[in-house]
Structures are given as C-alpha cells and as structure tokens.
Length: 205
Image (cartoon, rainbow, N blue to C red):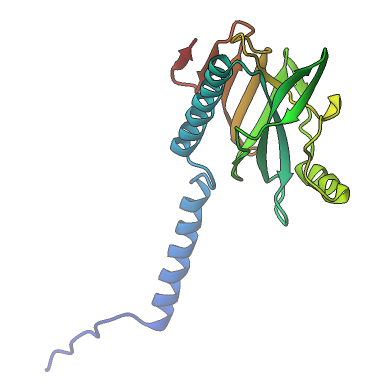
C-alpha cells in the first residue's frame, strides 16, 4: 500500500490565525514603549538648556548688561496637551533714572520643540506661561515688532543681572503629561544654576 505524503505549507485559516496573533502581540509590545521624547533626548535637552542659561549669566557679567528671559508656550495645533516653548531675551535699559526692559538684539530667541512639558516657578511660586500665539497676534495688530519698552506684565520672568545675581527660579522640563518624568533646573540669588536630572546633580556656580 502506497504511503501518502502529508501536504506541506499552511492553510489560509492557519495564516490568518498567525497574522492575528502577531498583530495582538505587536500591539502589546508597542503599548509598553514610551512614545515621543526618549530619556536620552530629555537629558540632552535639559543639559543644553541649563548650560545655555549659565552661558547667558556669564554674558551678563562680561558685558555689564542685565538680561531677562521671557518664556511663553504655544499649543500645537490638532494635538492634545502638546506644546512648544519659546524664549525671548530682553536687556535692561537705564537712562536718565528710568528703568525699562527692551527686546535684545544681541541674544536671539530660542524654541524648545514639542514633546516636553515645561513648568516655571519664581520664588517657589508657580507661574502660568503666557500664550505665544496671543502675543504674536498683538505684535501683528501693532503692525510692527516690539522695539520699545515692554509693560511690566509683558516683561521677563527670569533675571540675569550684570552683577552675576539671578532671581530665584525653578524650571521643570518633563517628557510629557502622561510621563511626568522631570528634570529640574534651579537658579539661586547668588548666581548658581544647578540641574537635577534624577541620576546625579550637575551643579555649577
């Protein structure tokens, strides 16, 4: 009696079952992988920001000009809880006894890309960041960029004085609202800016 060989290969039903199982397993794996900013990117951004602020403190001391930094937030269109953050620099102008903040031409604005959550506190008091789009709209309504002194409520939140002193501030840079893993940058009145990234403290005076 002849032996009948078993058919090799897979049936359509078997292939469909494998595809479904792989899809489910893949979804389970992807759900455990954090989306957006990686820990390495967050650490790099935090260190870059803290080094940038230290450099600006040194610039204030070396040039003899006091600078101020104003932070604003911009909601990313069509995304929930997604923001970009903008920093605009001002220089303290003292003329004939009058003190005012003017937009700086020496230090250019900067932007922190989407994917982060930035929180700011001055003297341990949390501040709500102004809306970047609203301020840009005001500039468009004026018909020209701001080149005159700004109002006190529109002035800088962070101060870098020519004496090397700072106002007391805390910046928390988090990965996003769903992953509140934050790095902390602190500025003291004595001019020290430190970064606490959860592993070790990077402290420079």
